[in-house]
Amino acid sequence: MQDSVIETKAKELWAAQEKARILFEEIEKGDFIRPSISESALNAKIYALAEHLFGIKTYWHKRIVRSGPNTLLPYAENPPDRELVADDIVFLDFGPVFEQWEADFGRTFVLGEDPLKHRSRRDVEAAFSDGKQFFRDTPELRASDLFHHVVRYGETRGWQFGGPMAGHLIGQFPHERIPEDKISLYIHPQNPTSIRQPGSDGLPRHWILEIHFVDRPRQIGAFFEELLTVG
Image (cartoon, rainbow, N blue to C red):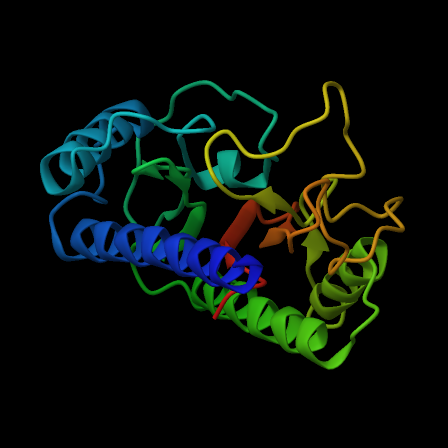
């Protein structure tokens, strides 16, 4: 019975993520990310598309659209609305809820041909793949060790890490939370918890890995996130 519950949870989280992936593919195919649209207008268009495609009205965290210098800022910040320009860089971070299962999906998009912006996009994706392999290869992996691993990966390629943590727990909405806990539920440099430590119900917990690399002098930030522990 317990094995069935474990398998169902993983399948539902993966299914939610695959729907988020389809949503982002539709965003990239459509005329959504373009010069002269504001971040807030783009956010509203994506919300409408998600509702049209999947009936999504609930998001477990604020929907983030960041462009240009706003891409330097971590999740907790709320920068002024900005209009996209030619040759811009943009990232999206959305947490839609599909039939009570949470997804958390982030991608970077580049307008124009700026080679550094395109490299930043490639590097955050490669850093995610490297971090996921590190998780697979390290049975007793601690959250703090994974954080430092992805930070070092970026530093060797000339990037700083853009936020105070590199991921978090995810699950059935609303997922397990401890009020005011800013460490133990996160892939945080001060969290010694094993990524594979079960939850209070004795079942495996699932994590999101998020990569945010920045180059502050050039005002470039790139972002990538999805499931670490499934797939």
